[in-house]
Structures are given as C-alpha cells and as structure tokens.
Image 1 (cartoon, rainbow, N blue to C red):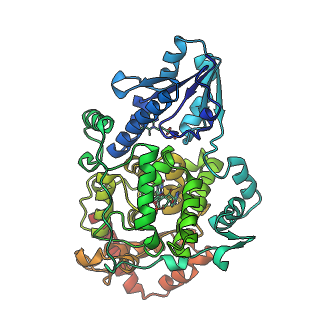
Image 2: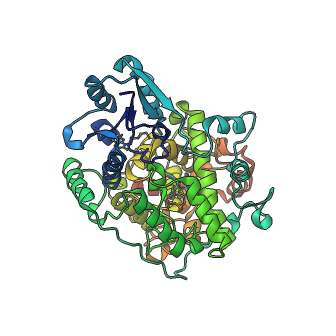
Length: 505
Ligand code: FAD
Ligand code: DLZ
C-alpha cells in the first residue's frame, strides 16, 4: 500500500484534498471515533451523534467505491487519532500518512510531532474546501490597519463572480444589511421543519452516545439532523424553498415561538463536509436569478457564507495561537451554573441557553446579542465562555467558534475584528423580538425589582471600561451620554447593576 489517508470527523466529503487523488488499488483510508476528540470539551450529544453517524455513512460510501477502509468505533476504546494511525500502520507497509489540514490549532500543532512518533512521513494538505486559502487571506490582510469583513467580502464576490454584473455588484449595492434588521412581532407564519427519522446506523449511534456520555448536554429525543451528503442537500433544498425568501428580512429577529426562525440550519453540514460552501452560494444566487427570492435575501445569505465564514477562518489562523489567550477587558468572572441548565429569569437568555443545550443550536443573534452580550456586560471569564460555546453547539470547531466568541461577542481581541463591542441594553432585545412580553423584567425600567438587568449592566460596562473605550470613535456618543448624566442617577444605576450581578451572574 502507498498512502494511509486519515479522514477526520469534520472532513467528510469527496472534495477532501487527501481523497482527490486517492486510488483504491494502493491507498487505504482510516476513520476513527476516539476518546480524545470526543472529550476535549463536553460536546453536545447532537454533535457526537451527527459526526459518528456521518463518519460511519461516509466510510460505507468509500467502501462502495472500492477502498479498503479501517474504522474504529467508540466501543473499540481507541484513545487518540495518533494511536489509531499507529495501530493500522503496524500491520502494513505504508509510504506515508496523508491528511487534510485540521480545523483546530491544537491538532495542527500535534501533527507536527507525528512523523517522529509514527516513524513515517506525514503530509498535511491545505484544506481546499474553503474558498480563501490561508495565503490568500494573509495577502489580503498584510499591510491593512483594519481587517474589516466588508472589504474582504467584496473581493470574494469578485473572485468567485457571485452576484456580479460584470465588475459591479448586482443591484448596484454590495450590502443589504440595513434591510435585514426587522424585529419580530409575530407578523408571519414560520414553516415547521421537516423531521428526519434516524436510520438504523443513527439509531445505534444514539444508543451508544447516550450510554457513553450521560452528562453531556443534548436531548437526543429531538435528534433530527441529516447524516449524509444527500440528506444534508435535501435539508438545504427545503430551506431554499420554504425559508430563504424571508431569511434576509428576519435575519436579526429574536423569536419566542421558534428556535430556528428562517435560518438555514446548515453550518453543521458545511463544517463537517456534508455541504460545499461554493455550491450553496451558487444555488442561492440561482434562486434569486430565477425570481424566487429578493436580492436582499440572497445577498444576506451569501455574505454569511462567502464573507463571514471565510473571513473568520482567516482571522483564526492568522492570529493563533496567541489569539486564544487574549482578554482585552480582563474579564474573569466564573460562569454562572445556569449556563448548564438555562434556569434564569431573563426570558431571552433562558430561551437561548435552553435551546443551545437541548438542540445544540441557536441562531446568530441569540449567540451574539443575547448570550454573548450578557457575557460581555457581566465580564464572564473569556476562556470559560469560549469553552462553553465550543461544547454546546453542533457546528462548533475552534476555527469558527473562537473568533466569533472571543473576538466578535466578547471583544477580547481589543478590536481585531469588530470596530466596537457588540454591547446592548434591553431596548435592543425588545426591538428585535417578542421575548420581553413573556418576561418578568421590563426593558423600559433601569432600576428596581422588575427592571431588565441588561439595562443597568450595560451602563456599568460603559462606566467600568471607559478607559478602554474612550478612544474608540464609534463609542464617543455613548460615552458622552453617560458622562453628562446626573451623578445621583449614575450612582443608582451602578448600585442596581451590582445587585443584578450578584443575583443573575
Ligand atoms: P444562517 O443564519 O442560516 O447563516 C448561513 C450560514 O452562514 C451559516 O450556516 C454559517 O455557515 C455562515 N455564517 C453566518 N455567520 C457566520 C459567522 N459569524 N461565522 C462563520 N460562519 C457564519 N458558527 C459556526 O459554524 N460554528 C460556531 O461554533 C459558531 N460559534 C459562534 C459563536 C458566537 C458567539 C457567534 C456570535 C457566532 C457563532 N457562529 C458559529 C456563527 C453563526 O452564529 C452560526 O454560523 C449560525 O448561527 C449557524 O446557523 P445557520 O446555519 O442557521 O446560519
Ligand atoms: C469533534 C469530533 C469528535 C467529537 N470526535 C471525533 C472523532 O472521534 N474522530 C475524529 O476524527 N474527529 C472527531 N471530531 C472532529 C475533530 O475534533 C476535528 O477534526 C478537529 O477538532 C479539527 O477540526
């Protein structure tokens, strides 16, 4: 045999560069469910089931293509990817191990020690499933003072000729963000999502994961994910047909009645290889060209995948490993216990945390402006918050989780990504949705038993961090408003904020 091709749990596509030249006549493939990957955080059980079932299905697909596939299941008790490789290498005579670059620095760093540890050449190939190579991102970023997503995104639109009319953006505008901020007042029906019945493979994995990870988050009675490329494509088709046309308008809405609203629910598939990012962008563009949705919906979606997703990955690899230790505001407060139960009286936070734990899913505004905003305002420990996000979401891998959490939500990188902290009071949450009507706190009140805690906590954050924020031109107006406020008011607000911290954080 020539190559032992290691396929990681989030590399399950035939576009995987380690597989593109694979030859069943002389290459073997290895997939391994291993303890170390399954336990480095308390992964949501939905994520464990998705990956293990998708890995098993992908292995069968490769076998049908004639490959010899070595597969370790969870019950085989293999502890690490390295020991899985070693076990297979010991019985064969391979020239090298071939693997696509992993999505986390932790593993990329470890691979560097493998040639010595395994006594064989280990070739790590660039992950060509992303649309901006790391070299291309660095070339774009080098020499720029600010790395703003918008300019990166425009270059990607030009490069891939997506939503372009020659060298101009379709509709003569690059960005329809302003039309994507409509608040939710139950003005539309939200179509119910299709239920996917688990097949025999998934049913077996659900049993194994339930037994092996009894204390991890995730209510598996609600498992409804696709576990194959065809299944994921079917779910994406459903989104294009039933939700895309309203995706843009309600992209930032907070909705009491639905965990999903009109979002696509495809990040978990894109991130493990079941869907291809370029293909989903092209499909959405085609829907617009066919007249099936507004340009603002198509552009809003494409900006997320072609823009944000690629940009975030570029930021991760450009700034790691130091990035993971950044803590601009010195936030160190321990995570409240209710992050693992959702038992808090703040309705918006409780809903967002509960669905994150139970389903492994929350949409962007819940992650950013509800849970993230609360963590920012209360100064929760940056590392603990990042670990929590990495654990609870089905789509979480460090390359995408860390810049979003540490950089975008917590501003712990001091502004490498965001031009100002995403801090907001209860007014924002009320404007965006209908949680407040069901909540015991009033967004109109600043202090007192029924005051929304986000209000006083917001001003406490502004007050506490004024040294670090006052040179930020986008914070000038807010800082000035706080400064000129009546001193007695300020004292009362700060006192109430301390009370809220004791009570809720
Ligand atoms: P939609 O709203 O339908 O968007 C379409 C697609 O765009 C998504 O599937 C996703 O692939 C991409 N996308 C949108 N925003 C981003 C973004 N900021 N970064 C990267 N891709 C984006 N996304 C992850 O995939 N994994 C994570 O671990 C993750 N952690 C996050 C943590 C925080 C604090 C925040 C604020 C955001 C995080 N995101 C993460 C980004 C985003 O919230 C999710 O991609 C999105 O909610 C997934 O749901 P969806 O597929 O329904 O997305
Ligand atoms: C997330 C994950 C889990 C839970 N389990 C496995 C596993 O058992 N085997 C495997 O190959 N990959 C797994 N993964 C995905 C890896 O953690 C992922 O490849 C790295 O974090 C790099 O992105």
